[in-house]
Length: 304
Image 1 (cartoon, rainbow, N blue to C red):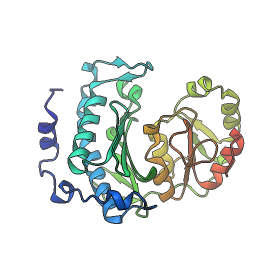
Image 2 (cartoon, rainbow, N blue to C red):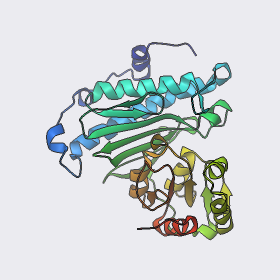
Image 3 (tube, rainbow, N blue to C red):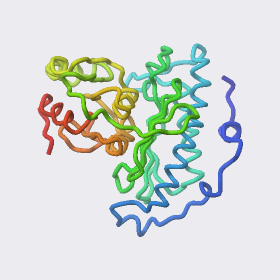
Image 4 (cartoon, rainbow, N blue to C red):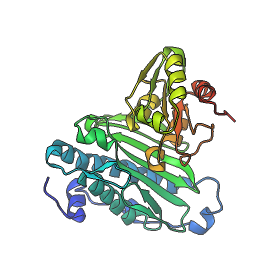
């Protein structure tokens, strides 16, 4: 893939340019810092931008995916893989967000955190599942989470190679979109028990590295079916009712930033293994609340 300046890339991906709605940043930072819930106009403006920019980023990533055999794969300090696709996708996201909301904070997997005094913070994972990406497996995702005063209020999970997108805003519902089709409501499966259902996880290595082999064994015995259709795709399956639950023993904040609001708006729940709705605990699970309670009991957590 030929490299282009991000400004040129932005113009080619979004030929209509940025709307005045996105170009203007109406700052209420002082008053909002003391609000429990965000101003709805501010939330909708960010949700609109997030929806627009994640689709643009999917186009960029799919270009890289088509030419992945020519991509160099480097290793980060934790030995996880990273490619030019990861880096350029995050740079593009940061540029578009910074243009529209220059006072918002941004945390991304590849380029760390830009802190500000704003109550708004974007959390980005340009390619969740880089190992799948480099092996030609189309189950990698692009994640955008937006927090207001550290609470998840906007979430988007795109699966670029499959053309799937799940997105939600606080009080706006959760939605599932295929390509250019109109979005439909995303809803978790409320009628299947864990014993009859599909439990997803990212891999078994995480259970070994966190000394949770016994937990994995209990989960395998309790679930009707266990599959490692994991990373972001497992959460998409839960949010759209195709899987009963998703569980991960090892996570970073950017891996799960969209999940709390998506699951809540889809009629489910997201929590860490102690039952707390946090993206900073290093582990997580998603399911219908009844199944989530069963999972917490199996892993020794608490629903309270």
